[in-house]
Image (cartoon, rainbow, N blue to C red; front, side, top):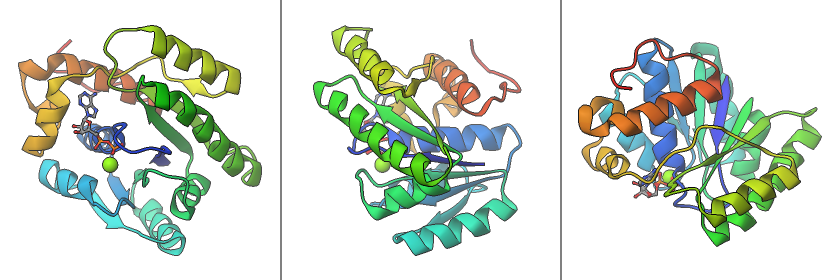
Length: 216
Ligand SMILES: Nc1ncnc2c1ncn2[C@@H]1O[C@H](COP(=O)(O)OP(=O)(O)O)[C@@H](O)[C@H]1O
Ligand SMILES: [Mg+2]
């Protein structure tokens, strides 16, 4: 299965969620590969530190994405693509290869616009590819369900794109995990809330129940 995280805008939590998803699936006994297309390579460095058994490939052109995705899917249960923030050819190629496209989104005014841009590139891929990939918005860096997130949900529903029931709070634990090159589930009790919400989100996205949860 190929899951791709993308957005028209950076800083929304793509890398954070990709690393957490990859390590979560690995911890459930799946074989996992990361396909990194972000030129900063922040995901591959983080995953290499957090879980060296996740395979890492980088790709910078549509041709490289296609070749890497073909090769990785023959050897892994899950290939997780980290898209560059933007609407370029690499993002579009990743979407054409994906089974599921995830668009992390934060509750800011600017992100209301990125919901409609995300939906537009999703529709583009679905139009070429017989309705695939399936697409989901994931609300990240949530403080409390305020006005903006209500507007986001309404915009998403108008545009006909699904929003996951699970959302991710704005928590220090995610920033600490990045700094320490680890994931929240390996940080002990102080990251219990983050661990529980990642469990809920990932099982909702991939349809696997967590084998064991340390907390919550
Ligand atoms: N749920 C969250 N709570 C707190 N900080 C977060 C959360 N998600 C992401 N961040 C922080 O926001 C910044 C951008 O996240 P990142 O995953 O690098 O986004 P992207 O890959 O979309 O550019 C990073 O400093 C990251 O630690
Ligand atoms: Mg990133």
